[in-house]
Amino acid sequence: MVSDDKEIIEDEADTGIDDSFDLRVLAAVVIVAVLIAASFFATQTGFNNGPTSTPFSGTGPQISLVPTPNVVGIGSSVALEAYLTGYQPDATVSVAVTVSGPPGSNLVSSDTLPFTTNSNGAGSTIFSYPAMFSSASTTAPGIYTVSSTFSGVYTIGTVETSFTVFDISNTNTPEVTLSPAHDPSGAKVTFSGNYFAPNSNITLKDGTTTIVTSPAAIKTGATGSFSGTFNVQLPAGRSFITVSDQQGNSVSVPFYQEAYASSGALVQSSTTTYVQSGNVYANLQGPGVILTVSGSTSLTDTAVTATASVLNGMSQSITQNPPGNAVAFYDVSISGISSGTATISITNSSVISTSAVGGLYYWTGSQWKSASNVTVSGSTVSGQIPVSDLSGTELVLVPPTQPATPIFDYVIIAAVIVVVLGATAVAVTRRRRGRGGSGDGKSKGKQQIERMTVSRSGKK
Image 1 (tube, rainbow, N blue to C red):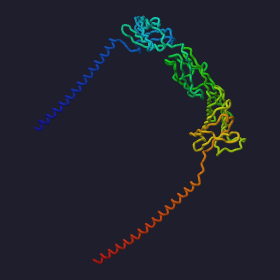
Image 2: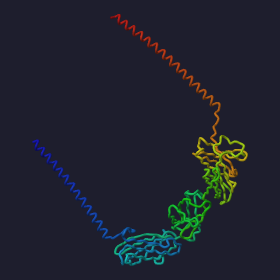
Image 3: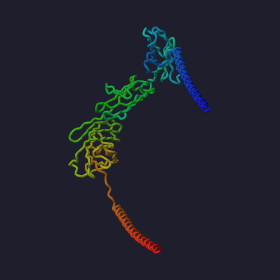
Image 4: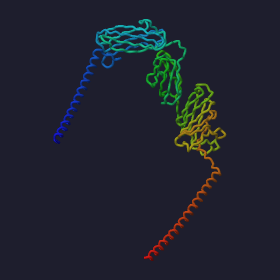
């Protein structure tokens, strides 16, 4: 009986193995069949419909539609040239073009032209808009969308493009802004413009030299606006950057390249810059001094010369010592203007820190005076001084002022010390007494044990 049961179990196991194997084979056959069907379907679909990619790429037919020019004034004409390459030689091809005007213009018109490819399978034809289209015009300013379909024995493909019509009577004058309008070599400048021709390529030039921009290709939008950046690589001094579009609009804006010059045993730098809307900026890299003037009443484009030097001590003509022990000495002058407030920022990593420098003083000719709004951040100290006081003015950096400790603070400190010492003495005394009492207890306990021992011995 046991043997029979064993055989039945083995038979069932064998049957399970066979069933599992059959299922795996069946699943594999189904997957292969699905793949074959999908491949056949894809092949048939491609054969029946022909190539339909838009635009074509690779080795197949290549199509394009080019508007010339792509920006025109109201009432002007545009040539729409259709190109085809990589098709069958000596084949007849038709191109259907539909032009849609700006939203709200209700301008929609179509036209179809045929052409024959040459022996290389290439050909082209030209549509003239609006002349060749019914109910067409370029009277509405804005973007015109152009769609085209190339057809032979089958649909070759479709392609879209656009052109822009703008109102040349627009009274807005093209404008360009540079930010900042001055900087040292290598710095990044952001530029932006408005009221240029829509959808037009923009170029920036310094004289005849084209300025490399980011992005490399700058193009206006539908409203004639654009923006980008460039790194300063201009001659020292003032340059004029000319910004132009493809329609002949151009604007020239000044840019001030900071100049640096060092001479003598002491570190010294000088630069010439210009007033811009009451502001002046000068970066004197040698001494590590940056001058920023605000609130000057001098006219825009007034030339300003800024000079800064690092000194090895005070001039002998100054008989009064500055407050504190000076850790660095400078001389700063501004000529060409006398109004406004100069913010002077001095960077010197070897002497400036929040613990080493706390004050910036300048010599007025009769006394040392503290600059206003003095701040220290890292290795840079900044303060404000009237421009009228910077005509070859010596400056010193001094350590932070240490406030005197009031006598009351000393009294409090002494009282705390006395209390701590008294509390310590009391604690020590109590601890010693506690130890003595504990010893007596132990002695008495020992005597009681001895008495109990004697008593027990007696009973025995």
